[in-house]
Length: 259
Length: 105
Image (tube, rainbow over all chains, first blue to last red; front, side, top):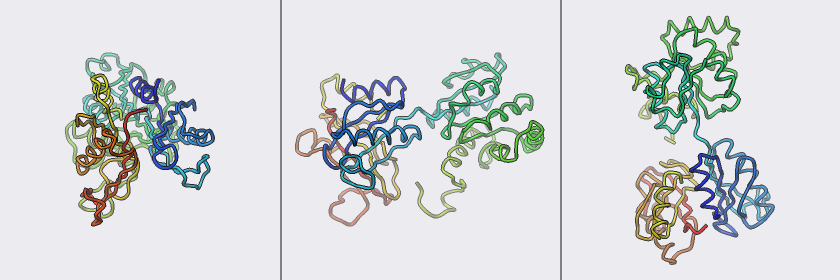
């Protein structure tokens, strides 16, 4: 099986994989395909270079990063005999939406456009159905805290949790469980009044100030969103802004590079 | 790469040879990140993109030259410059480095 065939099969199966290619130096075009467990196939033409690049590719894959790195002919650091382009085909970032409400379908749609794998989770089986959320990758009938007890350990900085229930009975345990995960974005819907009451309850539930500060609440950027669709854009824009560390003003009103 | 897989498969099944161009480095402002991929077959059909439409035409020429055996795989750079070497540029002012190669692996 060629490297391309292996890559194609992995991508089609939705398996994470990294492809390393020599783009400058000896053995131009040579390939090494690396799986998350470190298994590699192919060769860049030197056993030591293969070993070092496989290690780096695993790291890049874990972080979902793609970049060109430079090495000595045998994988030495701080040398530039060969340039290796390491392309990560990481799993898509996840967005877990708690609450099967009006806003959920719109948010799931926009999150899909941005490449998230979307899970809708609600304890109420009447509301959380595949029929109501055909755009979601997964619809789960469970209590948020119980669901996060199952999958919380798998979540990382690329993932997002949005709590849309705005019912304290569901919100508080969901947020309390969500702050124990490593997700990069945690947002909770609700008016400023809901937010204030919820903050009191979160504190009563034992959350620290630092944990409460992680919650983007009220959820979304201040773009005057009214409809579920506009709100979905405001939330997804906030997910991006938090990841990139931007203050999300209009580009017209800022200076500096766009990307 | 993912977004051009179906086209590549279709082309290969039809007996076409394929070249791929991938963004492997960027400097300054550029529309697409490393990993953006464009595929070109020996009939000049194109899938995917590597910029905001600024350099795609030139990339097709590179890919076809490689498929015709007139050029070897390697890095091609496009950037905004007065230099003669950059006949095609990015209007956004950045520089992109592409690795263009035949799909022979």
